[in-house]
Image (tube, rainbow, N blue to C red):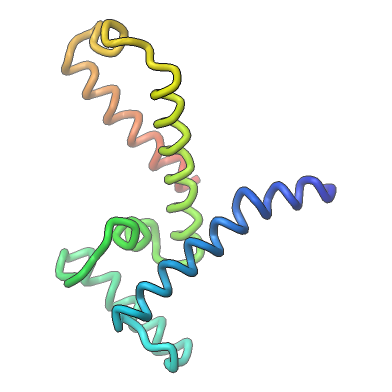
Length: 131
């Protein structure tokens, strides 16, 4: 592993993870979900309680990114999964926009086949984000 590989890892995963964690924890601190003065044990207990409330749809003021982070695991690996999922989705979105195949290609096999293919693509993106 050389220095270029380390720099690439820093810019592709390290910096985005830091920014994403900063915003998520800032939102949690500002909303009162967790307190800045709490110790590690109480923050972990609060995260377990929040994860359970999100799973049962009882969470009071949830945002989409927060829900997905909790769904991916709510820790470092959840954050990495969320970032990977977002990177895959964004790259596929721009690839679709700039290389639009046309409606005849999209719906060539029918509307039902289009939605099945779309669902399988989303499932594949989630699996790739977990791996």
